[in-house]
Amino acid sequence: MSRKVAALTLTFCIIVLAYSSTSYGQTVEIVKHQKQYSTAHIELARLDGKPGVAAVFEGSDDLHYYAKKETAPAGYKLTVQAKSDNVEFAEAVFPKYQVFTEPALNKNVEVYAGDFAVFVPIKTPEAQTDAAGKKADVEVKISGIACTSMICLAPFEKVLRTSVDFSQADSWKQITLETDAHAEKAVTGPAYSVYFALPLALLAGLSLNIMPCVWPVLPIIVMRIVEQSRHSRARSVTMGLALCLGILLFFACLAAVNIVLQVFYGTVLQWGDQFRSPAFVAAMSLLLVVMALFMFGIFNISLPSAITGRTGSGKGYAGSLGMGFLAAILSTPCSFAILATAFAWAQAQHWLLGTLAIMVIGVGMAVPYAILTSMPGLLKNLPRSGRWMELFKQAIGFVLLIIALKLAVALPQVRQTGVLYFSVVLAFCIWMWGSWVDYGTKAAKKYLVRITAAVLAIIAGWAFLRAPAAALIDWQPYDSFVIKSSLEQKKPVLIKFTADWCLNCGVAEKVVYSRKDIAGLIEERGVLAIRADTTEKDFQATKDLKNLYNEPGVPVSMLFIPGEDEPVRWRSIFFADKLKSLLQQLPTSQTPASLTQK
Image 1 (spheres, rainbow, N blue to C red):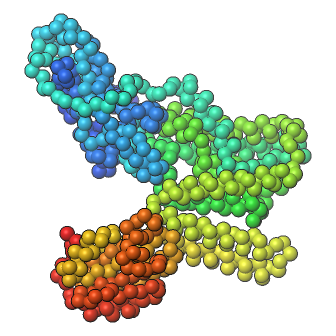
Image 2 (cartoon, rainbow, N blue to C red):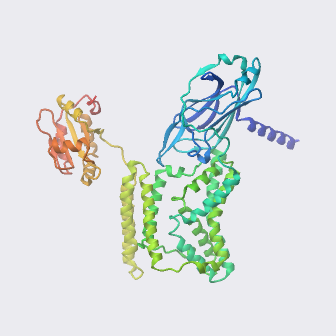
Image 3 (cartoon, helix red, strand yellow):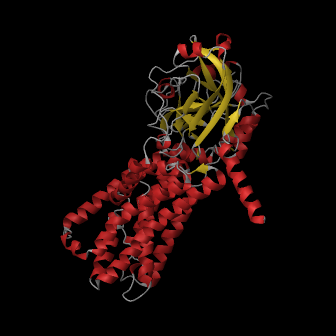
């Protein structure tokens, strides 16, 4: 009896799940993630005199649907289709899309967000006449994928139903819709089938082996294969399989994350989401700098026995496994668009099919190593090493630096400078580590040099990579009219002439304007704080610095005190105490400094 009850319960749950995405004549929640949401309902409407149904969306602005399949994950643009037994509907008419900028990727995409409507007209007026006086059910299917600025959710398909009395079509609500003249026709279903997607995933995996980020470890992998081939073919094959298993293990981890997100959280980790994390982008940029230094020969990677493997030791298999896993990790920062396309398609499928596609990517990357280890004779065809190989290796180092720089400039503006400065210090520390000592150096000196390098890197990381503190002073942009108006009203004005390329300006910012006591006095005394940017010669602050204030360069700070004809000027960087003394002599203001320019 209990088995029958369980079976009935399971059947009921399956039926409920099958129809849970179908709604009849009411508002339906399309997607929701934390505070971001979007709902839809159906309205009978007329557009330019043509009758039809309108899918009316309401939601938050950050949650968006994609307007074009070229920029949508796996081609899942927003689609709206209507059908009925009595009438035939034409293709949907979409509103004019918005342009949304992906924060981390700095990429513009066409989206629909917030409140908007999609109109689906009746295809033939004759069908409406034939159906006059009749009622019918209309089914509207909405499908696509929605993303926020931080994450993409799982693909969805919702079905809304409503009852239509075609005899009342003339009284349906007249709507207006601003459309895009270049909007493309609606498409249905995925952008491509599984028979195309899986070979694409295999090709994407193969392409990972030519990624510049993988090249630093390729010589090590090839040396391992050559070394193992000298012992026996059986050992070469088994070690190669362990290497391939390490690659597959990395992609199995990605597949596991995909399953957890889809099954338990209803979201997907779209390929590229990791680049929305400043910490990940910074780490990848710095890792590529380190790999570039390795290609330049600044240091060598000395692998322990667990990685290099010893003949007859089980540790060799663990080393092959780890080397394969490392190669897969390094392939991701500079992967081609083909991988992003294949991975996005996989993430947009049911978790079973998505897992298969992700693992096919791993198989594609592992295939060349499996072939080389099973056919050691192929290694004889590899070109012999020589000076050309060393030059090629160093050239790849420059490629890695370009990719590292590309990642660094994708960081938020407040973090870019810190990462670039730290990369230089990190390169210096690695140069100390690898070039100041060699195998003949005494152990005490070697430890001293390398501990010093490590400590210096840690201190620099703390100084440059930590999140920047919020500005203590409410700096206003340079405006000569605002400055003149404030001076006429007998209000104190502080002008800080600076430039992005000025190192002393940065020092003055830290030792003077980052002091809480000075920032507090500026606010308390109602001082109008002006940041005069002279980075470029065409800026108004640059022109006034020379023509109006007769100053040759930066840094320069000026405090205009009411009643004084000339401002007090500081051309040095250590004037905090003098500035504080003058601020303390100013009368307390009842008006906040930020309001003086209004």
